[in-house]
Length: 420
Image (cartoon, rainbow, N blue to C red; front, side, top):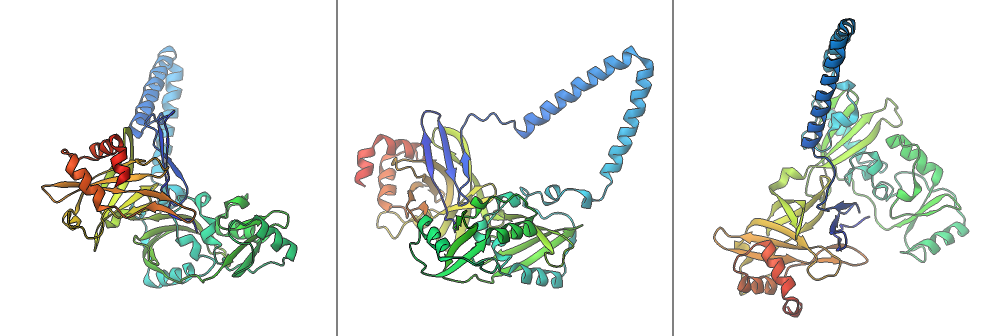
């Protein structure tokens, strides 16, 4: 499986900052963003409409007959627009119906308890379970490593020792077969992907955590455990052939919303379209985490836990990393009294290439800064447990406790910081 990533790369020459999530997608936080905003897009559209109206007015003033023709055409167009607006929502595309970025469920008829039970049984099957675990906005973004982790119900193909040797030689993880070997033929994998999603030009390189031996057209992996049948369907709606299911899986914190489409094929009754984490449900506060000396922001959801606030980093409506801004018992600072997250800011303060996070916590009258250091190793990436000594050092030396001031002080006193 892919781990939770929180890499932080600072490219000084272009003043660009990246923050990557567990899906390995990197968020470009360059402050120079030429992409039109929704507002600017609307203004452009209005300008075009005005220009079009001016041109039309000029044309009709030149020719009365053309005016009559244009008016008739406009009436017909308006009638067609009215007809389109009155079409049932089932004629909308699945993208429009699912509305991935919205935290709300689409409009439709509620699924019955018996329908939810059948869907729960379906999603807990080994060939479908992997589609429930990670977020994807559409089928092209599915993490196939999750889907095929336990073979997805596909029988192992015939393979030779030469094929296994080629796999082991190419593997960065194994030099021998130590666990149950999974060997899936490329033909079976491509057929499975088409049946489950409709994708017909599947790229073999997209199957993470497998080694694809092109010479034999076989995907190899090893597994030492079995998948858990732990999907619980909570609610759902139907709109035409499109279904949305609210469900919970395993030990994940947040509910998810799965969008699937009925196919009419009894062997493959549904196609998977999107899986959206409903992180907003548990968030007690949403903060725009800033990038030090950069206008870019990262969405951070504050979630209460029995030990204090946690901070979920949100990229494309998926939790990509979680930080715990607290430390063990300290004689100098009772961190439990600081339960309100006021500010979050990111920067690589120790120049190790990993995103460090400064969190400003408040008890209502006083504030402290907690440094969550980013780390990267060969197994995972994330945040280490903060040190009380750093928080104490910053409290003693920074009078106006803001994230910007805390980071500036660290950068201006690197020798002291490194000693701590």
